[in-house]
Every structure is written in structure tokens, then in C-alpha cells.
Length: 381
Image 1 (cartoon, rainbow, N blue to C red):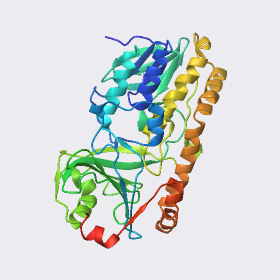
Image 2 (tube, helix red, strand yellow; image 1 turned 90 degrees about the horizontal axis):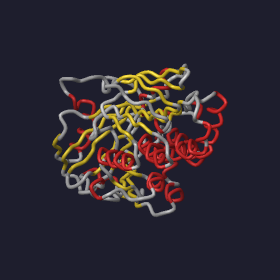
Image 3 (cartoon, rainbow, N blue to C red; image 1 turned 60 degrees about the vertical axis):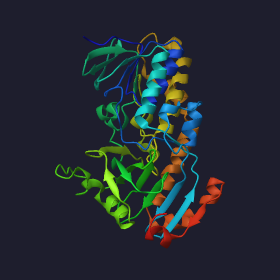
């Protein structure tokens, strides 16, 4: 059975796709949302909502989406400079699969039609507008929102070069760390990006690391799936932590990490990338949820304003006008991304990172606790 045509088709059922879908359906558009995975699809993500993501949501996620501790404190470990700090990043802790499922349920309640296990494969233009080939057949639409994340389908079909990406790996562990431990670990001997530990209730944690350069660590290790995180496991062992692996193998995925604003991609003729598909991910932290939500809101508001002109295929001129309005709505997010690119350049160098961290209390405008390095690395306590 083929897919129905729709006025607006959204490829990708993550935060960018679900947010834009729900708002567009509420505004009266005929919206079809295609998700390549199933209803409970998991992705490599911490599930942490920063203040910008919380503001974009406008409401608190329901209890079944949240994880304990709800607002964990962050310990910053800089092993290159022997610095350990703790502060409140004002994050909200969620389960990413549950968060995505909730957003899709909210969109469906607004009238969005959702097709799971349906991957967008090829985009073309014809007299009807946009033709999209999928794993379940072809369909037509006036506007296609590319919310395919790091895969960035529309960019791949263009002549634009792919945006830079981090090779990231993350798995679930049980560890005798202090409950609620959330760490960001910078250590040139472990990774050329950074590593993380995120609490998910009780003694369960997400353990992850990113690598800027491909190496033996990032290549397939079928005989030892957790080999990509061996350095992190050794780090915890050196701290005296007992660890059990919950997942048979950790998730692996690229994370888009732009190094220049010119690497962003904004589509063509009615095809509009939103969220990570456009390159909007913080290269300093790997956060993309906030940019996905803000992008979803901005494109939904923009298309609503151009509703009367969407009864026919989108012209080059109309696409340019849509893009100008869309990016105007994204101005705060674009400014944040520029700053994050600067932060990433600073964090990559141990000397600059050590100098910048002294300014952290001024930047955060709240206290930062300096912890004893030797005590923390004799045994985390």
C-alpha cells in the first residue's frame, strides 16, 4: 500500500519533525510525518533538555518521560589541567525515546498522520511540486521538511559538502557511582572531543564519548562491541568504580559539529532542512534538541504566514522569502550556535580551556564549586 500525498511532508520523527508537524497541523495544514524507526526508536542522545529547549517546549514533559534526578548537577573533569568543578547547568533529565514518543503523540493529537518504519530515500521536483521516494512508495507534496538528522538527505542530494561530524558512542551501564553523578570529562589521552556520564535513575547511567578523528577506536569491533568505550571503562576502573554493561553493544552515530556558520544548509525549492539536517548542533556539547525545537517552531510559523502561496509548487523566489522569514525566527538560535562554535574551538585546546573555565561563574551568573582534584580521583565521592 502506497503513501498518501500531503500538503506538507516531514521526513524524520525526532524533535524537529514532531514539533513542526504538531504546530502546522494545528494551523490547519495537511501534514504527513515519516519516521524511519518504530514508535519506541532509540537514538544516541543524553536526553538532557537545556534551558533553551525547555523554553521552546513551553510545558514540562509528563512524568513518564522524566528521569531521576530531574535536575542533576554537572561535574566538569579536566584531566589535562587537573581541574574538577561542580555547578547547576539547569538541565531537565529525560528518557530520549520516551521524549520523542511523547512529542509524536502530541503531534498526532493535532491531526498529524504518522507512518513508522518509513525511510525517505530520494527527493525530486515535478509539475506537482516535490516527489519523495520512500521505502514504502512515492508521494507528492508542496513542502518537504528535511528532519533526517545527521543523514541530512537533502544535503546529500545537493552539491554541498557534508558538515563535519563527531564519531560518537553511548551505552547504558550500572555503576556504583554516587547516585545522580553527571560528568563531562575532558582528557586528551581518552578522546580528542569529550566523554560523558549521565544518570538515568538509581545506579543506571549513560556512558559515552565522541571522537573528532576516525581511528582504530571508532572502527567496527564486532568481537568487542564495547571496545569503542574501553578507555572510558578503564577510567572508571581506575577510580575504583564497579561497572556492569547493560547493553549488548553501545549505540554509535555521527553527531554533526559545524566549525563555521557557512557549513549550514538551508535547502532549495520547497525543501527546508530543520534541526541537525541543517547543521544546527552545538559543536561544544553535541546538543541538538534545543535547535530542533526552535527550528520546528520557526518553520511552522513561517509556513503559516505563507499559507496562501502554498497552493502551487514553491518557486525559487518563494523559497528565498520563506528562508528569510525562517532564519529571522531562528536569530537567537543562530547567535547561540556562533557562540558554541567559539566555545568548541576553546575547549579543544587544554591551555585555552583552562583559561576559559575561570570565567565560568561570570558566564553562568551563578556559583561554581571547585572540588579537590586529588580526593576526587583517589575515589569519586
